[in-house]
Amino acid sequence: MALSSEPVRNGVLNRWRTLGLTGKGEILEGLRADFVMGPEDMPDDPEDTEAGKDLPDEVMQQLCDNLNLLEEMSSIEVRVCTELLIDTGRRPDEVCQLPLDCIERDPDGSPVLLYDNHKAFRLGRRLPIAKVTAAVITAQQERVRRRFPDAPSSELKLLPSPVANPWGTKPIAGIWEQHRNWVRALPDFLVPIEVEVDGEIVTKLLPFDKGKIFPYAYRHSFAQRHADAGVKPEVLKDLMDHRQLQTSQAYYRIGQDRRREAIDRVAVMQFDRHGKRVWRQVQGLLESEHVRREIGEVATAYGVCREPSNVAAGGHSCPLRFRCLGCEHFHTDVSYLPDLEAYHADLLRSREKLMSAFEADDWARAEAMPSQEEIRRVRRLINRVKADLDDLTAEEQAQIQQAVSVIRCGRSVMLGMPRIGQPLPDVRPRRTS
Ligand code: SF4
Image (tube, rainbow, N blue to C red; front, side, top):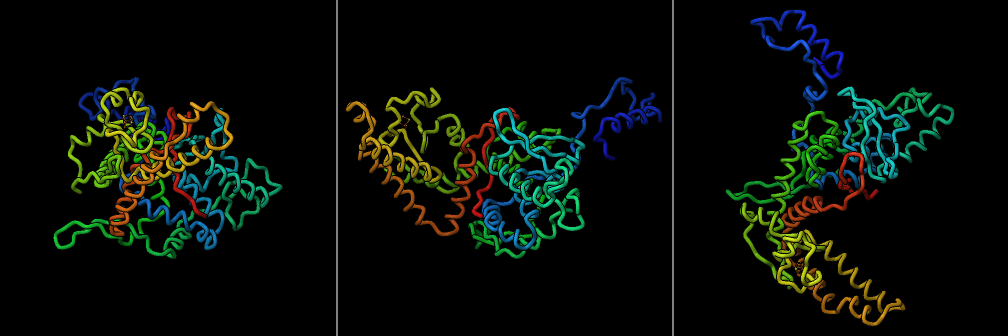
């Protein structure tokens, strides 16, 4: 029985009272006459929310890389619908039914998607979206206006059906069939999977089951990406537009587990400041090591610091003025490789700029100038990490890459999205087309 709207909920309560179910000895004896049910008392409608149905990163990436093919095989509306499912994690019918004017701006100018949660009868919902997602919507709005120049905007759909739709008021019916044909037409999605060979667990690149790639899976993937990025359960609940924390909470627990697994994986590729591998066994970190990682170190720009006084000060009391590459308390691992490369490029840029006609006193210029030794150390560290990565098999590399993306997700650059109370990480899958 659907109990989502308030009149229905309290109508049912009244009916139970009329039937005498609250009388003495009856099943609802003791139910107070002034008891009513609010939205927060209702469980979310059953939803396909079991965790673990998200799509692996490799699969998401391959799908995003082939959106052009989806457009060729179906239509621009189906492509835009799929992009919005991926980026916003809304249910397929919520995206198909979007009105043309479905974007608003927060006071700081950040775009917000306006949509209706039909499943829970919650209309006018607001979801912060990335600017690139807003751009996908804006381009589609322009196409629709060109197609229906005389129709009032308020009656148009963002994704109008291509057939029997002279006024643009009928949305596309769904994308299931086109989506399935597209997925079938794509080459195998190879993902690292653990299998048992001769009694040993090994990782192999095996084809992912295409039957698991369906439009609703993007909602799972959206939740999982945010959970992996450390988004708090209350925020995840708001993002998923669930009434109850428990409905969304499973994703967070899984997120923690996945993060731990990922940390275990990259722990085998740790390096000290000289680029010397700090070797450890593959079987995973001890519980105490995980705890130490949480309380006994602080992040630096391209690794971690374990210097006690700096850790105690939350990373704001470095006695060496953050010359980590010359400090014995510094450690890094393979997940920081992009940061090391960015730092190296930054040092070279700074050096070049300071050597040009940049106006500054000599002492300031000399102190700010990156030393050749520092540049050499970063380069050496990068080369060592890369060389060790190259020594791995293709499967091991895929496994490490997967772990790195989970860990880096938690370190994502934050975007200001004040509407739901805290900055959200930008975890939108990368597009190449
Ligand atoms: S220089 Fe040493 S003490 Fe300072 S932040 Fe880096 S690792 Fe920590």
